[in-house]
Image 1: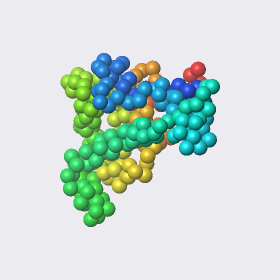
Image 2: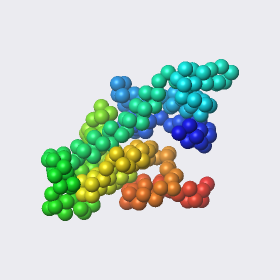
Image 3: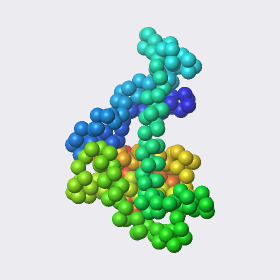
Image 4: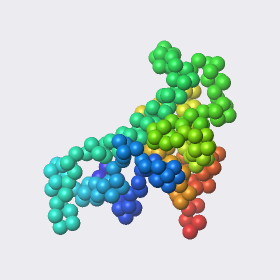
Length: 237
């Protein structure tokens, strides 16, 4: 983990973006982020990464004995970083399971009995991608409510366009969860793929990736052109 943090820090030159939901509030919705849900500032995360990459042991980090810019630094608790990682996971799981309850309230019992979350007829009905289009406003409304933002139809419509890649990705995973027994716990990277796609709500961002699944799952979205391979990105420079 220390090596990965070091690589990430060096590649980004220590620059860490603010939480995409924070940027969404500031740049698109023009509202303050809910104060009781404020994520750690990007500068704080950057410093934590810098301290961790310089440390040699966990005790050195927790005891504040990491040599740092002529003095010493540390992190009194790793809970901030753990909470930062856990937040998107909780939200992601809640969205997927809420959709399951909406479609079939007894899905947990059925899963325990049969290994399937939906009856056969319902699985067949929900197989088509078009069957999920009516779900899109609900996903956006849930996000807006979480952000304490207006759920006016015009706001929902704008966010549906700006977060089209997020919606395509979410619908794909939710379909897999309900129809093919997808397990969020076994696909942790999907949580953060969906999370980073939220940056595309701001027009200045692109995502450069070597993950073919991310591109495939969002290829029908309005933001598909801003999700590109490294080679394709270099060709735009």
